[in-house]
Length: 197
Image (cartoon, rainbow, N blue to C red):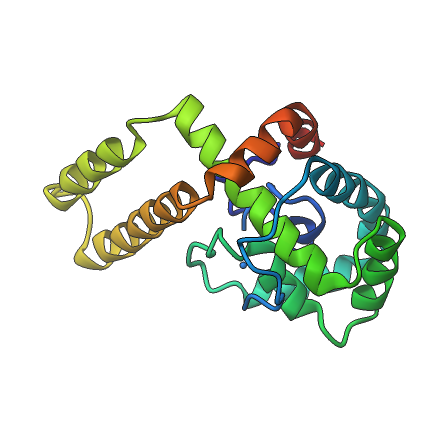
């Protein structure tokens, strides 16, 4: 099951299943001041469903992108556009661009920017609804880990980096504009279904 806080899903799937994952430079020129409309969110979700059909054709790209992952938490404010940047030059890039243009986007850069905003707003909603005390819990977990006699200094450093990355991702999600959150809220059921698929 995919959810906005998972980082284990293959990166290609995170491109076509936002939320995905989660698991990603901002290429789009679209500013945050642009309105994220109800129709644009719906078109993005439909384009993701259409793009899912391409996934079996590009399993090798999936593996390549997964191998490039250095284990750090992705930047959830740019997760879709960063994955798209990694796809440049691959046959999948052009195929995916055809799909998103069929759903009303000018190009993959616009689609990626929209996906970044949808994903970030979705994460903000999920975090607010499901775990408002997550930051305090993570800070407590870090403190407990630091005092553990059962972990080496290297293990502690790795765990600390992961937890700090997760907290950074939470901060990033909490920066989602309220207008984006309100545009995404009516689509939560569809986004959650995508995540489950």
